[in-house]
Amino acid sequence: MNKMHCIKVCPSSLNGTISVPPSKSAAHRAIICAALSDGVSVLQPIDLSNDITATIECMKRLGAGFKLEGKILTVDGRGVFSADSTELDCSESGSTLRFIIPVAAAGGVKSVFTGHGKLPERPIGVYTDCLPEHGVDCVTEGGLPLEISGKLQSGIFEIPGDISSQFITGLLLALPLVEGDSEIRLTSPLQSVGYINMTMQIMEQFGVKTERTEKGWFIRGGQKYIAGNHIVEGDWSQAAFYMTAAALGSSITIDNLDMNSTQGDKACVEVYRRLGADIRCENGMVVMNTGKLHGIELDASDIPDMVPAFSIAAALAEGRTVIRGAQRLRIKECDRLAAMRDGLSRLGVKVEETEDGLIINGTERFSGGFVEGYNDHRIVMSFAVAACASESGITISDMESINKSYPSFFEDYKRLGGKTDVIMG
Image (cartoon, rainbow, N blue to C red; front, side, top):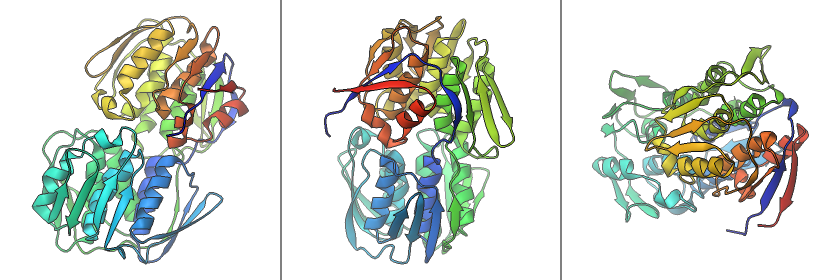
């Protein structure tokens, strides 16, 4: 990886109206469904973050065709599974990896999955446990590279629901393509249910249906994805950064969020309201202003990606905030619990790291200084927002990591009145 830059973010107030990027979660799913369709689909808007690029490139290696003009992506799925064998580089995208492993297996494509950053260390044991029972050989030393061969067979798949919902999504996407009916049965409680609902909703828009059962899901085999047009909704997980900025004193309106979204992170509206922020949903827009913040207790098991941004707002709330249920953050692009504890501590906040969360004691203002970005997009963006309420500004390393999900973040940040200065790392 090329040497990254640091960015100095100065104290400021953000004000104005912004459109957040299209949902990365929805885009991954729509791209795969379109690529599996026997025809041509049009998806929009699409932003080429690193993660989305990884999914496009992998589906291209499996035989689908893609053409991007502006933010309009045309997908030709008529050549999918034309490859006999291929290498699939998932970059640093956990969604790309976990969604496409069973998809490639359903097509009988011998595949070697590789990745970068922390991705080779992230768990894939759910698949290496269940796929060999259904016709797929898996060769791995515990992570990536992973080599699969054979063709996925239908049947009963017993998997945990509390490691990552991405494994369930991958199977839901793949199993309609195989002969014979299948069931996914959960062996532990399900987390991030909203993202499973999103998967089912987008699949249905492409003509494929699944059914929720008492223990999991029923998937009828032999179905076909049908090409069509799809509008990708705005990303609620990115909205959390602007909600934090508003909670710290800014006034921001977001104009492209779906109030009926199945995105789990739509819960950020109620979470920030509980914290004391002034958030109103009106005329299809989310209008956000500051309020008197007070500490709360938060179970983040269904919304772990919100924790970095939320932690910034909680650090300036009166009293103590306790975050629980966020242990999955330890196996993201970095250990996000450790990264937030480290960064907040450097800014003068008293914060304790627990096994599954953080205990944050509110302060009046961040001191400013240097924090590590840990090559993690959500850590960098969170501390950029924290700089709004800092005494002397915050210098953050690894600024290019935002390209993973939100490449235009600092452009949008400055458009709203933020002040930044890029410096060499």
